Amino acid sequence: MSLIESLVAEGWLKTPRIIEAFRKIKREDFLPARIGYAEGIAGGPEEMKEMAELNDAFPIGYGQTISQPLTVAFMLEKLEPQEGDSILDVGSGSGWTTALLAEIAGKNEKVLAIEIVPELKEFGEKNIAKYGFIKEGRVKCVLGDGSKGYEKEAPFDRILAGASAGKIPAAWREQLKVGGRLVAPVGNSIWLLIKKSSNEFEEFKYPGFVFVPLIEKWKNIY
Image 1 (cartoon, one colour):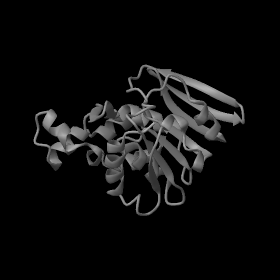
Image 2 (cartoon, rainbow, N blue to C red):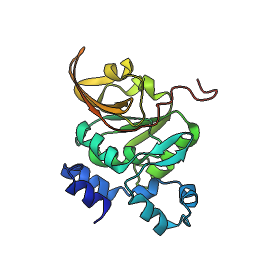
Image 3 (cartoon, one colour):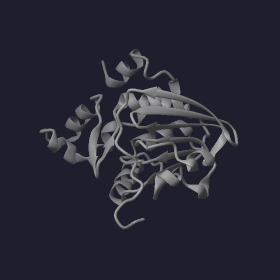
Image 4 (tube, rainbow, N blue to C red):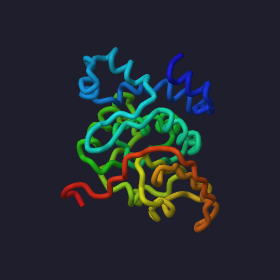
Protein backbone atom coordinates (compact mmCIF):
# COMPACT_ATOMS: atom_id res chain seq x y z
CA MET A 1 0.00 0.00 0.00
CA SER A 2 1.38 3.41 -0.97
CA LEU A 3 1.81 6.25 1.52
CA ILE A 4 -1.15 8.15 0.08
CA GLU A 5 -3.36 5.05 0.14
CA SER A 6 -2.38 4.53 3.79
CA LEU A 7 -3.24 8.14 4.68
CA VAL A 8 -6.62 7.71 3.01
CA ALA A 9 -7.28 4.33 4.66
CA GLU A 10 -6.38 5.71 8.09
CA GLY A 11 -8.64 8.75 7.64
CA TRP A 12 -5.96 11.45 7.49
CA LEU A 13 -6.78 12.29 3.88
CA LYS A 14 -10.51 12.63 3.17
CA THR A 15 -11.22 15.37 0.65
CA PRO A 16 -11.03 14.34 -3.05
CA ARG A 17 -9.38 17.58 -4.18
CA ILE A 18 -6.69 17.32 -1.48
CA ILE A 19 -6.09 13.63 -2.23
CA GLU A 20 -5.69 14.41 -5.93
CA ALA A 21 -3.16 17.14 -5.12
CA PHE A 22 -1.15 14.66 -3.01
CA ARG A 23 -1.11 12.29 -5.98
CA LYS A 24 -0.07 14.92 -8.52
CA ILE A 25 2.52 16.86 -6.49
CA LYS A 26 5.33 14.38 -5.92
CA ARG A 27 7.06 14.75 -2.57
CA GLU A 28 10.37 13.47 -3.96
CA ASP A 29 10.57 16.65 -6.07
CA PHE A 30 10.97 18.66 -2.85
CA LEU A 31 13.63 16.59 -1.07
CA PRO A 32 17.23 17.88 -1.23
CA ALA A 33 19.63 15.35 -2.73
CA ARG A 34 21.91 15.59 0.31
CA ILE A 35 19.18 13.93 2.39
CA GLY A 36 19.74 10.76 0.40
CA TYR A 37 23.44 10.75 1.17
CA ALA A 38 22.79 11.43 4.86
CA GLU A 39 20.49 8.42 4.98
CA GLY A 40 23.11 6.22 3.31
CA ILE A 41 21.45 5.91 -0.10
CA ALA A 42 22.62 7.10 -3.51
CA GLY A 43 20.23 10.02 -3.72
CA GLY A 44 19.09 9.23 -7.27
CA PRO A 45 15.49 9.49 -8.52
CA GLU A 46 14.44 6.01 -7.43
CA GLU A 47 16.04 6.35 -4.01
CA MET A 48 14.44 9.75 -3.45
CA LYS A 49 11.07 8.34 -4.49
CA GLU A 50 11.52 5.58 -1.91
CA MET A 51 12.34 8.12 0.82
CA ALA A 52 9.36 10.29 -0.14
CA GLU A 53 7.10 7.33 0.60
CA LEU A 54 8.16 7.34 4.25
CA ASN A 55 5.79 9.01 6.67
CA ASP A 56 8.61 11.01 8.24
CA ALA A 57 9.84 14.60 8.36
CA PHE A 58 13.29 15.20 6.86
CA PRO A 59 15.75 18.05 7.47
CA ILE A 60 16.21 20.49 4.59
CA GLY A 61 18.88 22.58 6.31
CA TYR A 62 18.95 25.72 8.46
CA GLY A 63 17.05 23.98 11.25
CA GLN A 64 13.97 23.43 9.06
CA THR A 65 12.24 20.32 7.72
CA ILE A 66 9.95 19.04 5.03
CA SER A 67 7.00 18.05 7.18
CA GLN A 68 5.67 14.57 7.88
CA PRO A 69 2.98 13.72 5.26
CA LEU A 70 0.48 12.75 7.98
CA THR A 71 0.84 16.20 9.55
CA VAL A 72 0.49 18.01 6.23
CA ALA A 73 -2.60 15.95 5.40
CA PHE A 74 -4.16 16.80 8.77
CA MET A 75 -3.43 20.50 8.42
CA LEU A 76 -4.78 20.75 4.87
CA GLU A 77 -7.96 18.93 5.84
CA LYS A 78 -8.48 21.45 8.65
CA LEU A 79 -7.60 24.37 6.36
CA GLU A 80 -10.23 23.27 3.79
CA PRO A 81 -8.66 25.18 0.86
CA GLN A 82 -11.08 25.75 -2.01
CA GLU A 83 -10.64 26.39 -5.70
CA GLY A 84 -10.15 30.12 -6.20
CA ASP A 85 -8.87 30.80 -2.68
CA SER A 86 -6.10 33.32 -2.04
CA ILE A 87 -3.66 31.61 0.32
CA LEU A 88 -0.66 32.63 2.42
CA ASP A 89 1.85 29.85 3.13
CA VAL A 90 4.13 30.92 6.00
CA GLY A 91 7.56 29.29 6.25
CA SER A 92 7.31 27.71 2.81
CA GLY A 93 10.67 25.90 3.08
CA SER A 94 10.98 23.16 0.46
CA GLY A 95 7.87 24.43 -1.34
CA TRP A 96 5.92 21.19 -1.00
CA THR A 97 2.93 22.60 0.87
CA THR A 98 2.93 25.66 -1.42
CA ALA A 99 2.70 23.43 -4.49
CA LEU A 100 -0.06 21.35 -2.91
CA LEU A 101 -2.02 24.53 -2.15
CA ALA A 102 -1.49 25.88 -5.67
CA GLU A 103 -2.81 22.67 -7.16
CA ILE A 104 -5.88 22.79 -4.91
CA ALA A 105 -6.59 26.51 -5.42
CA GLY A 106 -6.45 26.19 -9.22
CA LYS A 107 -5.51 28.71 -11.89
CA ASN A 108 -7.72 31.60 -10.82
CA GLU A 109 -5.89 32.59 -7.67
CA LYS A 110 -2.37 33.00 -6.27
CA VAL A 111 -0.60 31.30 -3.40
CA LEU A 112 1.83 33.62 -1.64
CA ALA A 113 4.78 31.69 -0.17
CA ILE A 114 6.91 33.54 2.37
CA GLU A 115 10.25 32.22 3.66
CA ILE A 116 12.82 34.03 5.83
CA VAL A 117 15.93 31.96 4.94
CA PRO A 118 17.26 33.10 1.53
CA GLU A 119 18.71 29.72 0.61
CA LEU A 120 15.44 27.93 1.44
CA LYS A 121 13.39 30.52 -0.44
CA GLU A 122 15.51 29.83 -3.53
CA PHE A 123 15.36 26.05 -3.00
CA GLY A 124 11.59 26.06 -2.60
CA GLU A 125 11.04 28.35 -5.57
CA LYS A 126 13.06 26.04 -7.84
CA ASN A 127 11.04 23.05 -6.65
CA ILE A 128 7.70 24.79 -7.19
CA ALA A 129 8.83 25.89 -10.66
CA LYS A 130 9.02 22.22 -11.71
CA TYR A 131 5.21 22.28 -11.89
CA GLY A 132 4.96 25.53 -13.86
CA PHE A 133 3.23 27.36 -11.02
CA ILE A 134 5.76 30.24 -10.96
CA LYS A 135 5.62 30.81 -14.72
CA GLU A 136 1.82 30.68 -14.71
CA GLY A 137 1.65 33.25 -11.92
CA ARG A 138 -0.15 30.86 -9.58
CA VAL A 139 2.58 31.09 -6.93
CA LYS A 140 4.65 34.04 -5.78
CA CYS A 141 7.63 33.39 -3.52
CA VAL A 142 8.89 36.21 -1.32
CA LEU A 143 11.70 36.58 1.20
CA GLY A 144 10.48 37.90 4.51
CA ASP A 145 9.42 37.43 8.11
CA GLY A 146 6.33 35.25 7.91
CA SER A 147 5.26 36.18 11.44
CA LYS A 148 4.26 39.56 9.98
CA GLY A 149 2.18 37.98 7.24
CA TYR A 150 2.21 39.81 3.89
CA GLU A 151 0.12 42.95 4.08
CA LYS A 152 0.71 43.91 0.42
CA GLU A 153 -1.53 41.08 -0.78
CA ALA A 154 -3.84 40.66 2.21
CA PRO A 155 -6.50 39.74 3.05
CA PHE A 156 -6.32 35.99 2.44
CA ASP A 157 -9.00 33.30 2.34
CA ARG A 158 -6.64 30.84 3.97
CA ILE A 159 -3.39 31.08 5.96
CA LEU A 160 -1.18 28.07 6.66
CA ALA A 161 1.99 28.01 8.78
CA GLY A 162 4.43 25.10 8.81
CA ALA A 163 6.52 26.08 11.84
CA SER A 164 5.60 26.64 15.46
CA ALA A 165 5.15 30.11 16.92
CA GLY A 166 4.77 30.96 20.61
CA LYS A 167 1.29 32.26 19.79
CA ILE A 168 -0.76 33.11 16.72
CA PRO A 169 0.65 36.44 15.47
CA ALA A 170 -1.79 39.34 15.40
CA ALA A 171 -0.84 40.02 11.77
CA TRP A 172 -2.23 36.64 10.70
CA ARG A 173 -5.53 37.31 12.43
CA GLU A 174 -5.76 40.75 10.82
CA GLN A 175 -4.84 39.55 7.32
CA LEU A 176 -7.41 36.74 7.28
CA LYS A 177 -10.72 37.44 5.55
CA VAL A 178 -13.94 37.14 7.52
CA GLY A 179 -15.06 33.56 6.96
CA GLY A 180 -11.45 32.50 6.34
CA ARG A 181 -9.54 29.71 8.03
CA LEU A 182 -6.09 29.79 9.59
CA VAL A 183 -4.15 26.63 10.52
CA ALA A 184 -0.89 26.95 12.41
CA PRO A 185 1.19 25.19 15.08
CA VAL A 186 1.61 26.70 18.52
CA GLY A 187 3.99 24.66 20.64
CA ASN A 188 3.16 21.01 19.96
CA SER A 189 -0.45 21.63 18.99
CA ILE A 190 -2.13 22.52 15.73
CA TRP A 191 -4.62 25.38 15.98
CA LEU A 192 -7.52 26.08 13.65
CA LEU A 193 -8.97 29.59 13.70
CA ILE A 194 -12.14 30.48 11.81
CA LYS A 195 -12.72 34.23 11.49
CA LYS A 196 -16.36 34.97 12.31
CA SER A 197 -16.10 38.78 12.26
CA SER A 198 -13.37 41.43 12.29
CA ASN A 199 -12.47 40.65 15.91
CA GLU A 200 -14.15 37.31 16.64
CA PHE A 201 -12.61 33.88 16.06
CA GLU A 202 -13.74 30.33 16.64
CA GLU A 203 -10.69 28.39 17.83
CA PHE A 204 -9.86 24.68 17.95
CA LYS A 205 -6.74 23.01 19.39
CA TYR A 206 -5.34 19.64 18.29
CA PRO A 207 -2.38 18.49 20.47
CA GLY A 208 0.17 15.78 19.85
CA PHE A 209 2.35 17.09 17.00
CA VAL A 210 5.99 18.16 16.72
CA PHE A 211 7.22 21.18 14.74
CA VAL A 212 10.39 23.17 14.22
CA PRO A 213 10.18 26.75 15.57
CA LEU A 214 9.10 29.61 13.36
CA ILE A 215 12.12 31.78 12.52
CA GLU A 216 11.39 35.48 12.94
CA LYS A 217 14.93 36.82 12.52
CA TRP A 218 17.65 35.58 10.19
CA LYS A 219 21.22 36.88 10.30
CA ASN A 220 21.41 40.42 8.97
CA ILE A 221 18.16 40.43 7.00
CA TYR A 222 16.14 41.98 9.85
